[in-house]
Amino acid sequence: MKTILRKWLPKNTWKNIKIGSSTSTMHSSSSERWLLKYKVPVLFSFVINNFAHNVVIYGYAEKNNEYAVHFGWGGEQYSKVIMDKDKMWSYFGIGF
Image 1 (cartoon, rainbow, N blue to C red):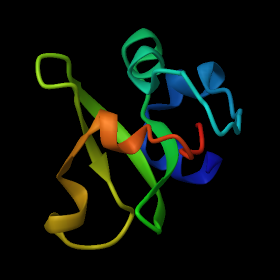
Image 2: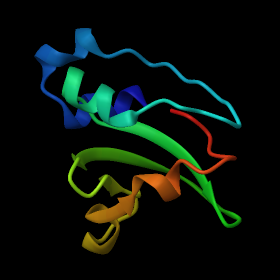
Image 3: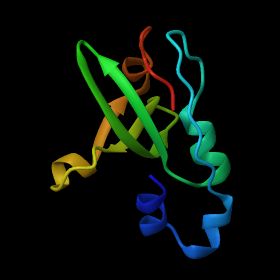
């Protein structure tokens, strides 16, 4: 994780990076708060209908309550994905 973030972010932001995690079946955190407050991408793990994956959230549209996410795979179709926040934060969602 640190290696990926250091590759993407300028050197002057490295000292501000905190690697942390939380897990809960009733998580109420808002990834966009971290994204907007610290101006860094947020790694997020989620489960939707037996599909589980980790994504990097790098954008948030408050009007539509949607995240811009990158799945970590090659190809533009995986780097510019819009996901509905309410679907990602399901009852069994895993926090960031």
